[in-house]
View 1 (cartoon, rainbow, N blue to C red):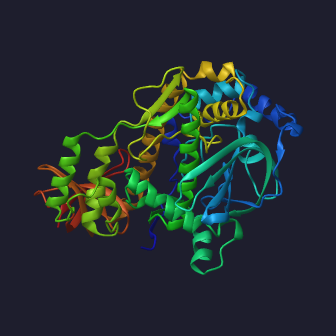
View 2 (view 1 turned 180 degrees about the horizontal axis):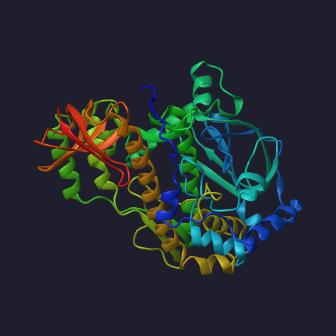
View 3 (view 1 turned 120 degrees about the vertical axis):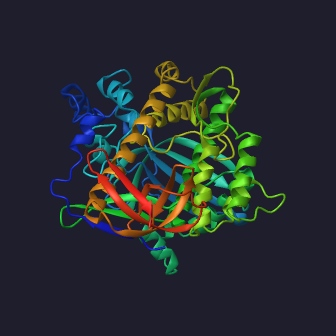
Length: 473
């Protein structure tokens, strides 16, 4: 499915009002900026304390134009049909003094927030887009994970340590996908498709649940407005995510074995919720073979089919309740993430997410046989709540931005008719996905079957409240 695009030319269409509505910080304080500038000149650790891994040909894979590059990857084939994964992660602890102004501000923010007209970064750009970012051709401090994987895709050994690395190329997902499809992949990721497929097969057997809904994205329009894009996830995106998941699961094992850490957790859905999903599949005329798990069933669906989209929208109910679980000395009752099918921790995006810095320090200390730093232990009581609050805010900001662009786009089309897919339906209103432009909305009228294609008419747009109103045509 190619990306679907429609453009709006709304004059003065900016997001300043959303920044004010959510009280987003406009800048960093002078003490934070001064500490960041000082850290660039004099990092907390000397280069001599790090392994020199600058000879490894790392590459980065990120969205086009990204500057806050957390990860660089190299996948090698190993003897016996296995693989060796080198995963370099930006080392923010090299720049952030514990308890200092940078640390306090990062804890207050929690994570980077992305808006179409510019992000609200977790760390000052001099770090997040400069000295800490794994930009191509630049030597950078990193936390280097080396994970050996057997021919079935299972990890057999993990090594994590501090290093100096130098990325050789900066790619985006579509460029890497095109090269692989053409049979000419970059050598550093030539083995990624095979390993990615193996890891995805293991994920299904573990019971991992992946919702293959196309994502709504916003991009700048050459004419000064904004473009709405529906972009299906490509294979490289999925395979690259499996490398991050592999690393996060390795980190979780280290922390669980040491009985200290912070995990990303999600309880298993109860039997009633799974039975409800079975009834939804039946109502949508989707066959659920006897003996197939939720993971196996969902993985076999064609995400491009309307009925599949509707069922994936329903499946989000199985994935509610995700959170962060910290522990020190005694394992918590819940150590696993139902959506991933195992224990998992966030360690691969420290430029953009607060918790990764603390989880990484625990893994480094445990792997080196050292005591976990006291500043990390002290933070474990607060980080889960800080991350939960920032996750909630990030979700609200993202939804508000999409709703606003939808309103700007559709304001010019009141009275027009569109093709739509019914994602959810109740007696009062139905949740629909307009196919082109890619817009979510509510449709009034008689309750239609979920998964059905219908024709709808746009009846009203409230730009200020970011609301669209449709009725069945």
